[in-house]
Amino acid sequence: MRLPSESAAPQERVSFGRYVYTRLKRAKLEDLAQNVDGANKAVKAAARAVEDANEPVQDGQAVRDSIDDDLDDSAQNSRLALGSRSLHATDESPYKDIFPRGIEYYTAAPQDKEVQVFSEFKQRLETHLPATDAVRTTTVPLVTQGLTDYAGAIDSLTKARNAHAILKTALETAEESWGLLMEKTYGALVARFGKRKAERYFPRRKRAEATENGGEASETPVPGTTTPG
Image (cartoon, rainbow, N blue to C red; front, side, top):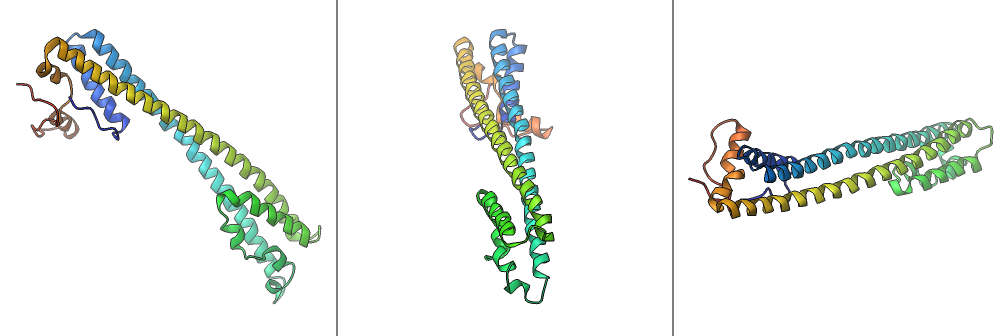
């Protein structure tokens, strides 16, 4: 008997376990069959929970990146508006005071610096532009809201990632328990019927390939198993 590899997908374990369960059920070995069925269902449920929990992570990433783009757009629009006020606007104040390191300082900021650099951008707008300036009155509210939304998105994404990580650990635990039960089931079958017959209750490569391909498969058994006569 050879179990799926440690790196195997949960679905491979479930498929393997279903085969074992059905063989045991048909042989009327109800005590062993029910244990295998329970372990199988635990892996399946844990795997589905992990898959479901990944959706909020993906959603959170999309929301975060969307807000990031909106903040970048606000900086770009401000740069264009201020830079077009005169022939030499980009060499003079207030443009140079607001963009002393260029637009990339804001738009290329790493995620962990996003709040810091756009808070600075907002402060520079408020410091170097009159309260009635069109760029200031248009951009500052957008940046203020964007910073609030960005902080909320980061918080939601962090919680989603934490939940996903916890469920992945639960899946790993379920898979480990599943493997131990399969070993225990194999041992129980060997004790009852001997190794040769016990092997029959577990998938071999030729059976797995036939199931996947819908046809004939190699007669080569999975390494570590025996082929029953």
